[in-house]
Image (cartoon, rainbow, N blue to C red; front, side, top):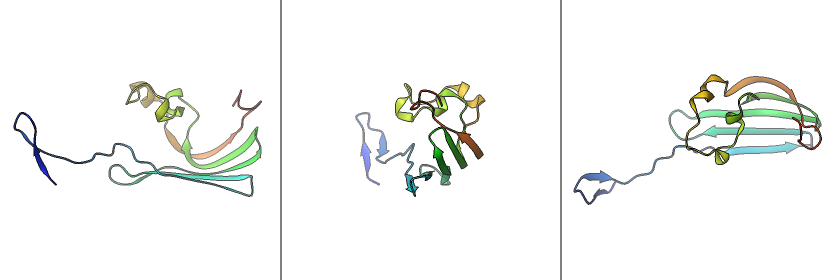
Length: 114
C-alpha cells in the first residue's frame, strides 16, 4: 500500500472499503419457474442472502421455496436505493429479516394488492 501524508502531517494509507457487494444471479426456466441467488462479498465469511425457487402458476398464485425476505416490516422490504438514510432504523431489528421456508403468495390486479 502507498503511504500518504495529509495536510496535518499524519501518516495514512489509501485503500478501498466495500460495505456492500452483492452479486445477484436470476433465471427463468420454462416461463413458470424462477430462481434467484444473492450472496454478500463484503466482510468475512461470504454469506448467502437469498437463494430460492419460485413457481408461477398464475400471477395471483405463486409458490416460493428457499431463503428469502419475510413479508413483514416495510423497511426491510424496501430496496437499499429507495431508503432515505445509509442505515436502517433500530425498529428493523424487531422484525425478521430473511428466513428459510415456503411461501404461497401472489399479486392481484397488476400488483395493486399483494
